[in-house]
Image (cartoon, rainbow, N blue to C red; front, top):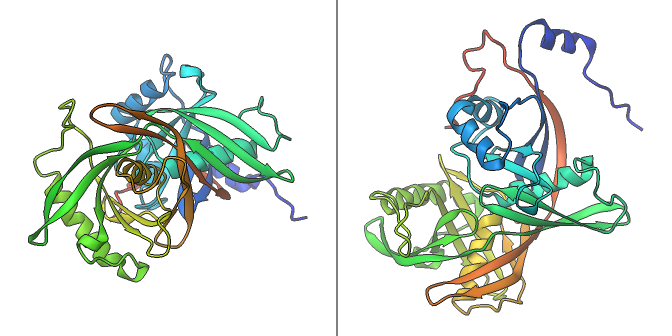
Length: 352
């Protein structure tokens, strides 16, 4: 067995010689997309204890932690981080604040699959039944409580199923892209997505076409959000910054390729958890599949999630789907992040 040791003494000496604010994290990837989960090093002020309070405090007073964790040179346009919050609010077992390169999103499916994996693998919740084949717990996200079922086989973690927040179609319409009107739909799956069926614009979702995918997504997002976006029912302003392209499989109505582009112009390597939830809700709402059907979503690199309905709620104006999203994540590293006081780029710089 390979010997695993703590940091060597000279590294510890360097960290403690000055106030280098070491932060310990574990890296994972979910279907190819990275998540960095903080284990220690971030101290919160007294009285800042709930998920929403921590999210606001980080945004307004501690944003250097986000940029230090996920921006270059330590991260990049794809890197996301999760700060665990040990709270029992809303009947949950733990909370999570999500830190992305551009914001603090309400929900992130691949991050929660990665976070849930680390919780189970490292025993972050000591009261969980370690030897059970099915382990259930709940995570409080800014979007609301998310259920988790961790599935084991022969003692090894195999997959995570998230019971996501309610997902739905917000509004349908047209948007001008490259001089022509394109049918678009704003979808919600824990976050908002400007979605387009690529058959409408003859856009290939092959990885070799990544540059063109990003170019079209940037144009679409800029046009769609130019005058702001509001919910047609409530009138409230919506934070819309991601584009979702999809292509249904010609071989199966239960398979779809999903490619999400997030600012500054980076393609999600996973099929996107909240995006998969959103597209599933759209397909059920439009009668393309049934709520009990299982939809496989495929990413630009070929990795997959599956999604089905845990619950359906209909109102005169909308159909709300509670998706059950299944995927796998893997731990791929542990790291100590440090900030040298003499480093002008210690807190990172925004990805290009």
